[in-house]
Amino acid sequence: MPEGTFRILRMKQLRKIISIALSAAFSMAFMLSAASCGRTDVPHADEGNYRIVTSFYPIQILTMNVAGNIDGVTVECMSEPNIGCIHDHTFTTEDLRMLEDADIYIENGLGLETFNDRVLESYPDLTIVEAAADVSDAPLDEDEVNGHVWTSLDDYILMIKSVADSLAAADPVHAEEYASNAGDYISRVEALQDEYADVIDALNGMPVLVIDETLPSFCVYAQMDYITLETDHEQSAVSAGDIGGIISHMNTNGINVIFVGTDGDTGIAGSIAAETNADIYALNTCMTGEVDADAYLAQMEENFSLLRDIG
Image (cartoon, rainbow, N blue to C red):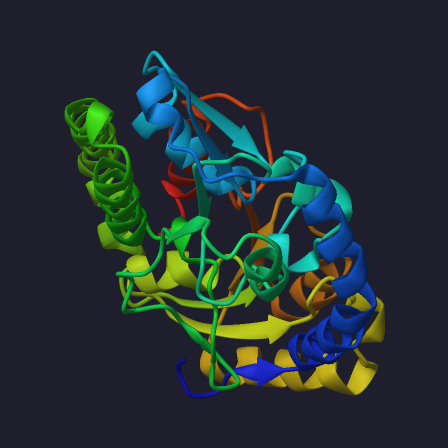
């Protein structure tokens, strides 16, 4: 993370504490639920029914493009499409039942899914795929990896490849179809990169304030000189002194662009913009939306179109 990064809250550490505290309480319920489910690890591919469960929306959309149109393969999602980030999701026994008889479970990884210990406790033989396993340029957030890497198109391509390779290895019956679909989807992502190459070039080196934990990877992808105001969905906790420090830093360093998420609160961004003459750009985080295979491409094209005149 570039120098000058501002950190206002430390909610990630709080989430870890809460997760540990809840783990013991959930443990008995999960064990009883798993016993009642009676999972048997029988390969469904031989029966012409291979069941893929994904953790949340961006992974669901990615996997739909790799596997969603293959006969005998189903793609489901453990969470609702408008839940937001999976690290805010409270894992329940209903989620556990969703994984009953799943052949494979695909997650983002990089620490976003904080409940994996509970999944493995109940289903120790379940194959878990970490889509972002090969991503090496994830931003750091107070020395922790910021796992919201799908907003980088380069990282998204790596995730597509990882999911396709993992599915081909786990379900060789459909290996060629996974590879073909992944190749087609990657070509479409690359075509989007080519179409908006001028926009991406214009963003290179531009200073920007980011007020959304999902967008730093986009800034890394575009090689922007960004700083962050980490509110972690609790913007009411940001003090006037914190905001004043940001305003001073922006005015001193000539930062006149602010990125927020379309699904976030723009109140603080508006206050800062009023004191810095900064322009606010509300970008789609690709974290919620319609369950449609074309959703990610449409959302990213929306972002590039918005930023075309930013320079």
